[in-house]
Image (cartoon, rainbow, N blue to C red; front, side, top):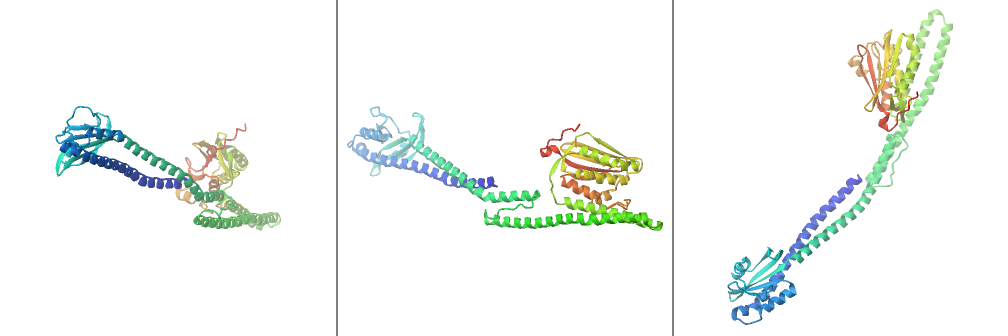
Length: 467
């Protein structure tokens, strides 16, 4: 924003300088040329008056002396011709033979009674000349003509000097505007940058971030005040949510655990006809406990951005497979790991463990007896992919579309399930900066793909091989 404001200041300044400077330079050059022409025309008229008696009556001042003195004084060449166009005085060649100038356009016009002036390039002298030619006449009769020509080198030098002066003034003005504009732009954008920093801190999870409200234009101060109000409300809401999660964790887990223990104690002492009811009650309490735990996991991760660290996904997958293998063997299911360690990703600490626990739990519920569940982990093009593939019935496209909804359960799902497993997986993957996708396995089954960012994308070095 600072650069854009500064560029705006400089663009406006440059436009104003061009609008004012170019006409000023052109006007100066035009005025100087007109002034030179006017001076030459005045001098030519005076010389024509002095030469009139000499051309008409043969008396009066010596024209050679007049033109010679004029050239010595002004460095301008003067030529006086008679009515036939033959020179009677030439300041550049006072003692030379008379030359015929009757064919020169300026003398033709002057001998015809017409004053004329202009600028031409002299190939003989190799320079530009400004000339004025006036007739020498009395009583309507033209007796000759006077031409004064002057080198424009000095005039051109003054014009160029004026252009350089205007350019230098423009550069000085642009430099001053750059300095002043940068200071002004910084003063305007500093509160905006401070507000952006506060916004980034709030987005990163720092709920105590606040913007400065006593600096900057009124509009920015008003925006900062509203931002602070929003941050305070958000802090209150998140604080309330976190307090609820903490309270719920304590208030719900404790009575559920106590209820489960009481039911287990009753099972050993209850009559035989009550055993099915007690077992069903224990299952429902266990299901309720899983449901509460799942909701607490979602509540803790939803809307939060905990710090991410480098995780070896392959090592985590090996550990979780080791933990789930005894239960899998009881169900006659094989757990297979296909990964080349290390496979490093950035994720929230513990999130990959919970993702795998939920996916393995779901897969073992769906996998038939004497089948395999395969867990693969690989890294390619800055992305880590983790697949959990079972050989169960899989899901239809409509079922996959609804599978991440909370409390959704498939038509053949175990009644003890909570319907939160895939919702938790999606929430954890999102918190880690990744995503999850459901697909068909070959020949049958479900292929759950979890994608995370590779560690190199965040500037972390992959962990060393523990072996």
